[in-house]
Length: 341
Image (cartoon, rainbow, N blue to C red; front, side):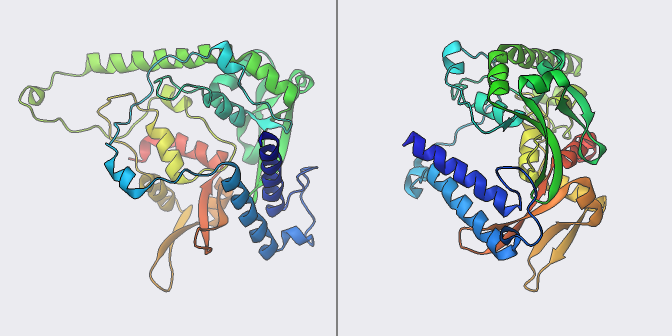
């Protein structure tokens, strides 16, 4: 069954790349006249890829009655030091296909015991270690933005610079072959040290803020003080894991809120705040359908900044457009994050 799942995973990956007009074996863009680049064929390939994903990773069905009976679980922000045992690391699943650093980080985080309260590993933790070791360095990537790309020493170790057209947007990032994946995993404890140092800095900043906060007489009177507007420190912003894959704005907001200290008196950031900021900058525009349905689409300025549209097919078989933000657009959010609230 495991072997069959791997075949299905690879088939899904091939179909997704073909639906984007990319040869999955050579990573080359298919010529304009290729069958896979025809819109109807592309949509069908993407539909089948989504179907295969449901077979490999089916979503558990929860009965409505059971869901209603379950008590609400209070969401807790991870605040324990990260610790990965040798037994856990030994379960890491290496891939014959090259993986991005973000994909490696996601597979490592999957090894953290559920409910442990341990902080997750970040892309920046691994990139920092590889930079210190001389395998990566900041270089110019897509749209002139700096990104972590392999040095000659890194290329010898199995790290490679990749240029891909992901959902219609040109991206430059680092991928790791099996040898490079093994090197990262063998040195993962160095990245764990980076993660725990990040946690220590975050806790120290939180303690300093609490120590400098004036006593609130309203708290003694049982009156709940008002919350501060959403804001992040430079250290917290630096901990945001920019993803090479385009993200929806709701996921960006979720990751930003995850950077807030546990129990902080700071309002959370709603995805509409991010969307409305892009509208105000002229990068998104509001559109209304003939039936009055409101949607948002990137303008030319927004497309240049890294906002793209991915056509998808919903459960009911109807096509819809998903607005996504690539790495450059995610970094733009980080540059202005304290202006969003």
